[in-house]
Length: 85
Image 1 (cartoon, rainbow, N blue to C red):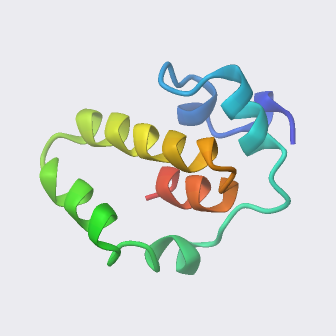
Image 2: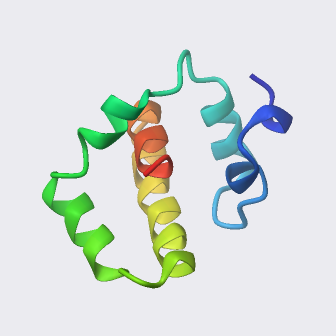
Image 3: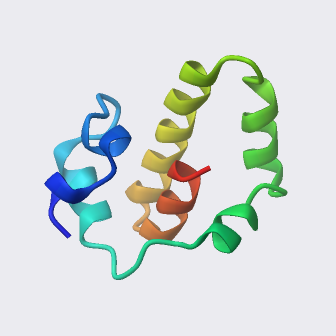
């Protein structure tokens, strides 16, 4: 996939770098809804989601920051899951 074909919220992100967007675009697959839902119970994800109830913009920024941590260690699949929450 090309960066231009990434979802708009990822493509237009000011949090993610061009290199990180390229990594996401190069993923072999995009996780399905079941895979995304499966990470909601992880303590670090649950805490992040609960911390920003009612503030979607801040929540999205922090999800992108969390995705960056996964991209930094090469876990593109987990980064996708976090971004798709």
